[in-house]
Amino acid sequence: MSPAAGERRRPGSSDAMKLKSMTGFGRGEAKLDGLLVEVEVSAVNRRQLDVRVALPRGAAVLESRLVEEVRKSVRRGAVSLSVRVAAPPGGQAVRVQGDVAAEYVRKLKQLGHRLGVDPSVSMGVLVTLPGVLTGESAADDPEKLWPAVRRAAGVALRELSAMRTREGSALGADMSRRLKRLGRIRARIAALAGNTALKSREALVERLERAKLAIPADDPSLMREVALLADRSDISEEVVRLASHMDQMAAALADGGAVGRTLDFVCQEMFREINTIGSKSGDIAVTRRVIEFKALLETVREQVQNLE
Image 1 (tube, rainbow, N blue to C red):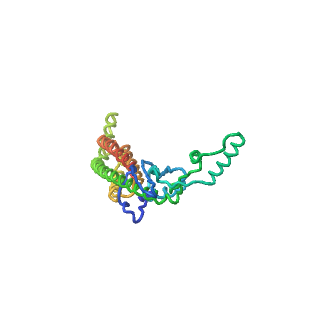
Image 2: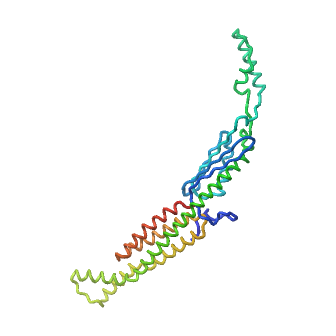
Image 3: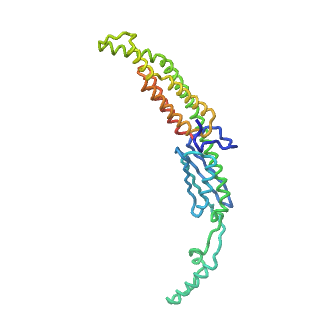
């Protein structure tokens, strides 16, 4: 079974062979011309990759670039990335807009003459008027701001990746332990499967005796019915396929990488096989093992939902 589309490992990636969870958090900082750029990124479970970016006003043009940076290290999950830009006191260059100030003076003088009041304007009042003094920094230019945003995002994404890798390693170890337990249950089911034909015959004969129907054990009709029952209740193929699926899951966990979708599909196939075993076998001992297997497999599937 081949991995789902979009899950092939990216050549050259140092984390390509590591299991990763889909949850994590990272934070990064970078400085530029007195500005402090802070980036925070968090991720939670989702079947597909969904990236949401929050940027300061005027920097929306950087959104697509940040989404691409996220895509380089994240394959699945809902990722939220936020950017904050802070300028310390005195961190901005102040520019005096002389044309704006002159226009204020002209308009105020005209108003003063019309109203018959003193048209003089003090400098203290003039500099407080909107647009006379403006701050100028890299924050006002997304292109100048981008290098710092990219550096901070890189730090945040590396932290996110490290956390997701640690959690992925723990998830892989836990699932491997559960898979071994599933293997022991499957082995017990396989051992019981050999008695299917005999138990089917015994059950049929018992029903005939309760109905007080005296049919010889070598009666052709009885033998045909026993053969049909044995064929319908034969679970050997399902037991073999179940073992194959379990081997595939073990191999995927050992290989690592973005195997979440593949393992999710393998779990579905394992549920299909164990359900068929439960419906075909009339052996109460097998039924008990099937229930035990399904309960444990459900916990494995829950863990798989957390893997990238």
